[in-house]
Image 1 (spheres, rainbow, N blue to C red):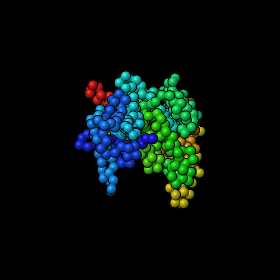
Image 2: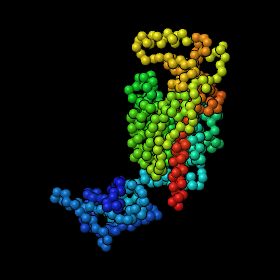
Image 3: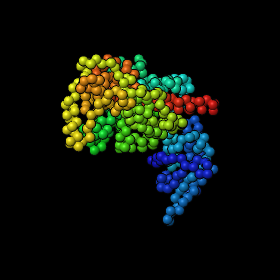
Image 4: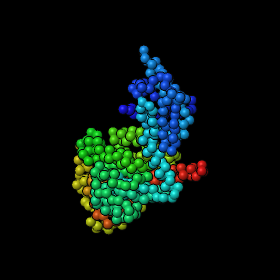
Length: 456
């Protein structure tokens, strides 16, 4: 029989220490006055405590009421030499010895840090995994930003439940290569063990249908986690991280996601397993887009990768002066122009009822537009519509115009129907904002590699 103890390595007067006391020692016959010696092994990252009569160290004691409890306060330079920067250990207590090894989470943390550093030093591309991939627009933006910092990346796999979105990405998105794996499935159904290669970067645009204001209202939810399909996806997200051990994580969602129970769990778990999280809200206009979409951006860096700061995510382009700058020339008699009398009548009715639904008809001289969602093709009352220059008609933006107000390269929606194109775009991100995120991460990577080269 043995006792297994997981604990943090302590410090005393600048020296690392490992502390054992009490019944777990007495149970194995380890008592005050017994002698022991340390047998460190740097190759296996292991320290053995061997109990023997001629040992150079002694088990001490601490009084507890009428009894004396055995105490072992192990302070030695061997702890630093064998375990390095590890913060936690695993100890197995036997009657004749105690075997101390590095905590499995610290081993994983060191492995993922070493893996990304070794790849970068050998000029290899970093492997990227993508969850809730959609049409791949978030991934395209990040890959573009990485490339701006001369960091090579390749798409290892992408998981997406909607075949039409995955088809679009595979057809139009240059991030794919012949070895990339397209997985058409719900995230929670994927057999992660079948993905044979670990990744350095994990990108996730978790569905916001349970967290957004409209999603909660439409589905009559009191909390995001109640959503039938999206509510528990954060668990699958964490399972991918645990299995694939990425060095860098990028998560995006609606701003409301920041206050969900899901995000609270994500913060706690990722911090526990050795990631440092950085959170910020990215606003489209501030990064050079006409659409004023706000998105939560969370960047997780494994401990050991230093220097990332959300303040380093800076705009890379200037915003066009007005909506007219991105509008196509649409003939006056085009089928796209619609009579909006019914919408106007509904707006009057809504005002009388005292609700907040208001039409958003623009002329093109506006310097920004509101967020355009995935259901835009349904011509919803509150989303942006463009007034006809001379008639009492209106139209929604074309897919190309929709892409441009989000600064998304229009080739990423080639071959799609208007409906699907608007869905892909409405579910996506402001491209230039997440391109800036990719560039900032790339610059952090370069900072760490240059520091290592200088130290060498």
